[in-house]
Length: 250
Image (cartoon, rainbow, N blue to C red):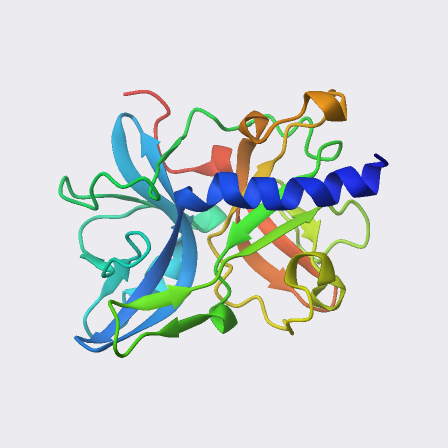
């Protein structure tokens, strides 16, 4: 198997492996209507369940008349939440601790241990990066159903090292993102705008330094969260997970 074939083969495996950790952040218009605003990661931080996402996602969702909710698993009504949010304005990251009664023991809902993060960035440029979230164009409100249905977008790319967007900060990294060249994950489906991908977690898949035959999805390490998109440069920009406004130990 050549390198390109191997990389393409990792996308469906990583998509299935990471999907249970994803959440959609939904602005609540009223009891009958909600809108997908951004994506996030269900995670465990200091023994507590939390949602990690981009700060501007929470900010925008909080502007809705009834606040915001989180997707709580397939076929479940979105879960309205409120409370303090830990923020890191410089890196546009936010952490929201979940109430004790949030969603439940479900096989399709899981929480990523924040310790499974790579905070050094030493292998970002030598590993393959994988982002997973919910684009707004793939989300719709179910009038006759329990809430918002969102089809995720799994996307793999290498770190962009040249032709970077202007003003890229030291805590950020860029990955190639060309919607016109996404047939491997979307088939014939048209995809133009990544709005809604903000807050999507980004992993390095763990192939760096390993033979392809030794690779498996649980070698992946969380490296950051999507915070910006530069269409002219065809890149997504992510903030590194080590910028989180949280202690890593209790």
